[in-house]
Amino acid sequence: MKTNILTEPEILQLRAETKGTTDRIHFNNAGSSLPPDTVVDTVVSYLQEEALSGGYETEDKYKQQLDNTYKSIAKLINADVNEIATVENASEAWTLAFNGVDLKKGDVVLTCEMEYVTNIIAFIQAQKTCGVEVTIIPNDEKGNFSLQTLEAAITPQVKLIAMTHIPSTAGGMIPIVEIGKIARKNNILYLVDACQSAGQIPIDVKLIGCDMLSVTGRKYLRAPRGTGFLFVKKDIQDKLKLMFADGFTTKSVTLDDYQPRDDARRFELYEKSRALTLGLGKAVDYALNIGVDRIWHRIQYLADAMRSKLSEIDGITLHDFGQQRCGIVTFSVDGVESAVVKAKLAEKKINVSVGLAKSTLYYMSKNHLTSVVRASVHYYNTEEEIAALYNALMIIKGT
Image (tube, one colour):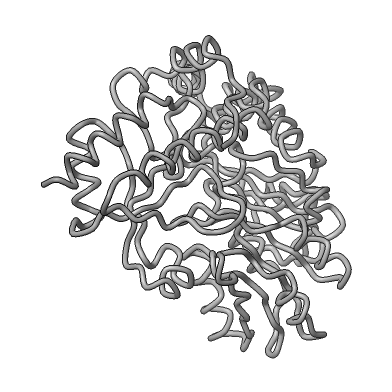
């Protein structure tokens, strides 16, 4: 089991800076974490100032702080600031990247069985409209991704490798660094969905070797809902089609042509919430201040403790596979529907989520799962909260 790297006083302080922890036990961080109070205050204060001074006028005043959001994101993932675009969510970021790739009939996309529903829909759309072929690289019998199978699937027709690092409805992880080495060796574009990763585990786009990476703010980064970002490596920005454009995305416009910006912000539109952008930047800085490596150790410690505790209950089946696991813990309770488990836990002010089959369709179908209970830990959770979950499940199992 991983050791606890955050001290007790640190954890108490982090909880004191998060009002939500006083009223409930939040094990739905893979859905949307409880934001730190400073993030909430940043957003609310900005909105109040907009109401008093005007939207454009407030934006002018906070231009430097808004620009600093891009710098903080770049630091978080070890990218250059001109490789970052802020968007409203990870689905938007991923879709901009995927649909920007010039895929044609006969081209092959390689993916994994852990892909999210948004990505699967985009694959189906590409198959129907462009004649693209999608090949799924399955996990082995132990739940580990097969790098050998991936290498064997490489052909001249493979134009994109698209992988979700951490799935929505399972606690396993895909070896994105090793996959990146294969992509680079074969000169294949590489797109990583890091929706559940950023803020939970250290992300280094240079180490991963990816060309594009999509992230949401609301999950482990503890940013407001309606925030996210897209990383696009500088030397491929001109190779991606723009899905939309406005005056902000372009550096010059004539009556019959336009030129896109020279940075990743060409993938943005001008109009978005500046308050939420500031909140995203504040959340990223908050994580950087703690240290994402320290956050990752704490999350692994708590997830291991939760799995160990839940495994003691007869009639509870854990569904997390693979050699390396994250802060998402999925399980089912014999004879009790996942939605009922969630509702009964909510009565005790314990937040969990239900992972539906469609959310991770390849994986869930392969393992004959229709739904699972998803409990996801963050660094501000405690061993006492895990014990409370255990006791509540014991009561549910007995009913």
